[in-house]
Structure formats: C-alpha cells, structure tokens
Length: 114
Length: 115
Image (cartoon, rainbow over all chains, first blue to last red; front, top):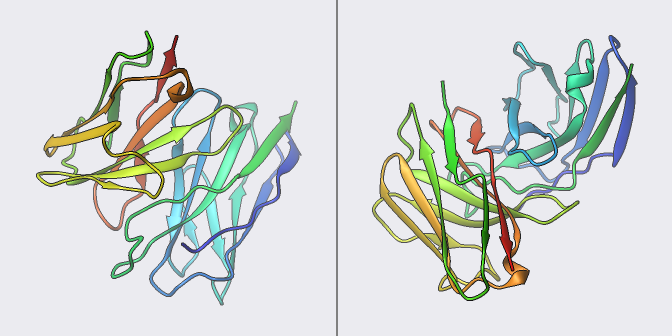
C-alpha cells in the first residue's frame, strides 16, 4: 500500500491559518488523496479529497503538488473545534489490490490554542 | 447526506460470549463497507472489507472465524466478535462510501469491553 508521512504534531493559534503537510512519494497515478480527522472516542470525519487539482470545500482546502508526491491541508481559520488528529490517506486506485481501501497512518495531532 | 449509523456505541460483555455490532448506511446504498479496529492511542487498523452478497475479505492477521462479517443488504453490515476475550477489547469502527468519487463516511464507533 502506498504510504504517507505526516508530522506527529502541530500547534496553531485560534483564528490563524493552519497548513498540515503530507508526503506521499510512492503515490500511483490512480490514487486519490484523502484527509480525515478524528476526535477522541469518535469515528473519523471526512474533510476533503482530491486527485490532481487543488480542492476547496466548506471545511478546508487541499493543495496538491504538481508531481503529486505531497499535499497540504489548509484550515483557513483554526477554531478550538478543529483540534483533532488529522490523517492523510491514499485511497487505492482502480485495478489495484488495495482498491477502495483506506490505510491509516499515525496522523498529525493538531493543538489549537485560544 | 451520507450518514452511517453504528450500534451499539458501547458494550460490555463477559469473556467467552459473542457480540454483534451493526453498521447501517442511512441515506445511501453501500455495496462495500469497511471494518476497523483502534486500540488506545493508536491509529485505525483495517480489519476487513464487507461485500454485499458475498464473503468478506479479511486483512492479513485477522481471524475470519473470530470476526464474522455479514453484509446481507445494501444498507447493513454486521460484525460479530465470537468467543470474545479481554484482548478483543477495542474501539470498532465501520465506514462506507457512496461511490468512487466520494469520501468515506464513518460510524461513530463501538467501544467493546470484554471482562
């Protein structure tokens, strides 16, 4: 399975933007880049996903490098409710043995300070 | 849209008994659902892929006879932990997707404690 590398932890202040990096140098051409976040004792929550182009939704933006070997999740204005573990995951592309599967790494623990 | 309901949220059972966990997609049909297990302070580990109308596919190291998965309809998958032991105590989570171009929706998880 293609793997991702994320910093163990990051900190931010409330109301400031947060850029969460992710490296995925072994990504294949059909792998989608997914981001999820998880609060303690809850199931993960979908944040955003993309393939090649940058993506925006009401929660965040996803910036994907041109070579697709890295991506950055951008929270435009962090709030205390954004404190969570953020997972960057490659969703197996069509035709592969891991098609459709999400393999979770350790993620980045985001702390937001008031 | 895309809501996944998981039940129960918390269960305590005696060692040697079996426990069933349900995962329902409420507003979409899911031909495939996924089951994960998460130990304290660890990441989610994929256990198996549940396929509607066919056998589940288990990840390496996961005992299929211990973790029985049934996906009898397009909106329901169940995970039964058979002959549970204290080491099976964990947080079990299911997920599903509306399709290839969508993200995955996760259930709220089931905290299983085997005593």
